[in-house]
Image (cartoon, rainbow, N blue to C red):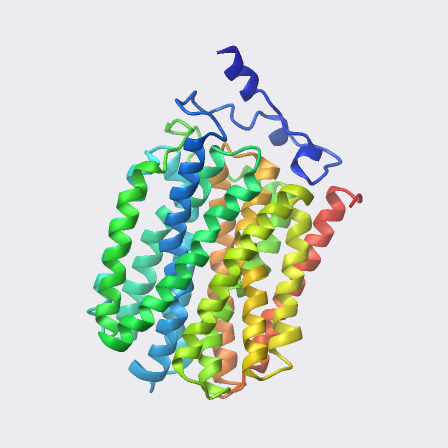
Length: 436
């Protein structure tokens, strides 16, 4: 028992976290795991990494499906709803991504009261059923409700719990653990996009929805028993505690997230149609572009996780966000060619696709992991609002200014948002400490 008390009383220093602080707030002075139960398994044990693997697979089927939506977007724009505007079709993907993150704060609240395993199983079941219902949808508004709103709301449970609960089990290599978890989204985006395209080409869009939906149910529900929270479920004194919103560190991270994570889905959605509309290439290349982003993201997340443990998550966030902006403004924008588009997709996959996990890592270093599900849910809520606005604004730019074929201003808009996020992160880093 003495060993447990000693372990729980450990307070990480600024040097340990990799980002030095001039002044530590009361939150940082609290033991990270002071509210955790003494579980059968220790932190950083083999079982802890088994929980990380379960979170990885949950990210695979939730974020992976979301990252593969560009395949559906391309099919809807070119085939099923060819007479409708890109902006109206984009509501399916934008509502999906918005609800996936907007519901994060509610998942965080409920996770303090109910068993994470049960919440994850119910969410996975509803997530799969939403895709099956989408197979019977023949109108855009029906797909917005099923493949968009219902899927996003349900998927937020296994997604948010899958990426935050593992943090309660890992202390020494938290950046690596998050990299492993979020690598699942890249792996999932890769094989789900390939499977989606194959099913659409051979069986049709409806059966593609049904097959993916059944896979979600089997994998999501089957792995839910491993999403074990080390924090005991009990009703908090305040159901919604907004005190963290008044804290300057949270405001900086939330602002950077608003500008960085909003355009995070744009290349997944626009690059497949860009390949068809501008480069006049086949739909298979468009699907391959999504696969390239996802495959690159696997390596990018691993590299980001390793470097974040060494140099600090804020430092790496600055570099990765800047490189993501360059992938849009320095490669995709000036060079309208297949090689340039592939290069832009690969660089964005390495950098831009890693930003979500790196922000979560930064939050865990600033606030600990005791309430990480709730605090990250609030940041994801900011992300969801940004994503909805950015996706719709970009689609409107393409339809109006670009007349459906000129992607210049959507690309510029995406890149500039990432530049703004980089500036905010630099100011935040300087405010924390001027030491590199």
